[in-house]
Length: 55
Image 1: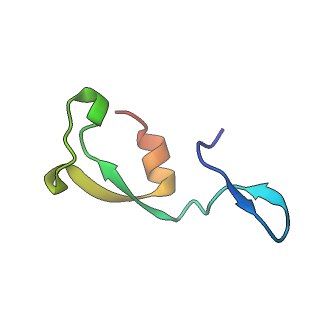
Image 2: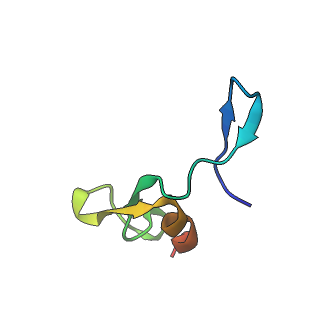
C-alpha cells in the first residue's frame, strides 16, 4: 500500500499523488547514519523513492 495519500477536496475522494512526482531522498537513510547534508541527497521519482524504501 502506498505511504502517502492526498484528499481531493472537490471530489471528496482519497487519491494517491502521481507516481511521477519528484521527491528529495537520502542516499544513505537517516536511520542508518545518513545526514541531512546536500551531499547525501538525491532527487527521485516518488515511485523510485518508495521502491528504494529504507535501503
